[in-house]
Image 1: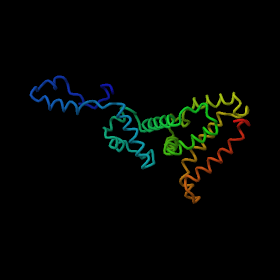
Image 2: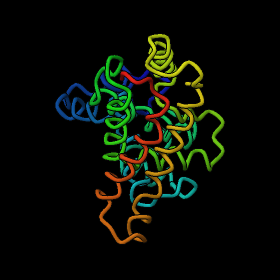
Image 3: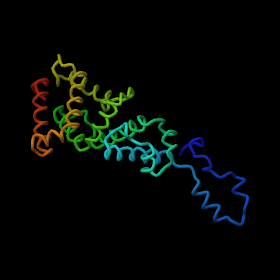
Length: 226
């Protein structure tokens, strides 16, 4: 529940007001319920989803109207500034929460074969390609607080442990490897639909062929036994 400072002015009736008219108990109770402070967690979630829906529809971060977001979420625009402070922070928060949901779907990846893990990440993000678009929009908007690599520390821990276990060749720079993988993945997802149209093939066919090709690019970096 949000603290008292987060409520719109006049949201909570004073004790004196509530006790002024004892003959209107039912009406006063109804008005009190209508004036309750908004639940912060619920409101933040509504605003994040509203921002994602509008970005999905309009596709341009600089054109994202905070008033439209508030209207879509059914809340007062002032709550956006109170809870998030800026449009960038709102969109970044929405992105982070969606990435968390995707990670839950993928499950624990620490013991998964690297090639299978990459294929699963590819398919999972391909099913929610708008997230790659949002990352790129924030990057183009020069958001200095953007962290484009999901779960960077956890993934690096997995890669380093795999290298110590002999999964990756000793001379492979696993940090740069991760940067290349994320760049390939997000860049491809940004362009997959127009490329498929230009090439005259279904998007799913291009996805399958691209995933196979990426596997061939990364395969030589792995030791013989994977």
